[in-house]
Length: 199
Length: 244
Image (cartoon, rainbow over all chains, first blue to last red; front, top):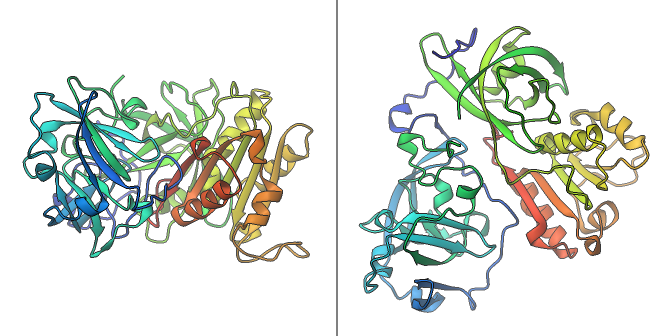
């Protein structure tokens, strides 16, 4: 039973029904990163898929932009408790990127410039659930929000949507990424409020 | 991680809009400097709101923590915590949380702290821990504020910085400076970074905390001054700001 906070009534927006538990609505776009924002030269940008032994796929910026893109409108939920509804992005679906990759490996580690990484089950980034996004709200994605390109996996907490993404490695078993090694949940479903690892 | 009952045992105004709450937490497991807690408020009808706040106090074994909360004009939780609560009130906390933006006194190398506004709070926990644990790391703090009246922990920082082998504090004022201040009001620039922060060849551990634009700006300057980006840890808060 929760302690009642004397005299606290709170501010209810009516939007709570659309929000996962413990989240509040924001209209601006806060930034959360563990370190400095990297600035990535587009001439040297690439996105690769590997299995720990071989590089299976590789795109440079130009080749990446020849892939079919999608416009998506999604809600974002950050583990620091803000949610932002109806954000619009343009990106390439992971279904496109993984289309000709034959693998039995069930997990992926997404890796970024600046050495960030985050783990995801492969089934969570296929079937129209994840994109490599390079435009936000019609403009090139700003560096502090992960530009030139970031992963977007909106059904999980936003730390899973790795900024400055540069590739993914397929793995046979689940291994924790950066925040997942520092006390955050291995999976991160906002609707189940999986914020922290229970330890 | 469980919710714990916390009783407010002390209140102290830091500025006109910021207040420090001293909480006695049931079975507090202890923390390290730089970590934060989730605070949960619950209304009589069961509605609840949760926000994260950095811990301002050094780790101690007395089950007490201090949070410094800045009141945000349209905040849902911060006005309650800064204006309504009184000593004896109870709320709930969960934590400590975060194992990245942390420092402990066993890290003996030079430490550079850079704070923007209420971003001082987790850095103050590091300064206090260094003092209470008699840490030997060489500390410098560069603290950017709008004007003198919004400095947190001003007297305590003055007292600490006047001790030998303690923390070296430099203020930067963005809007209004004290009288006869040598540097005109303005954002931190390359010159101030070079005069008030550890040189890159000492390879300091760098902690930067503040609003997003502040963190972006100062980390760019630190990297331009030669600091290793791998040694810079950041904590940012957006305009919603309730992270602190």
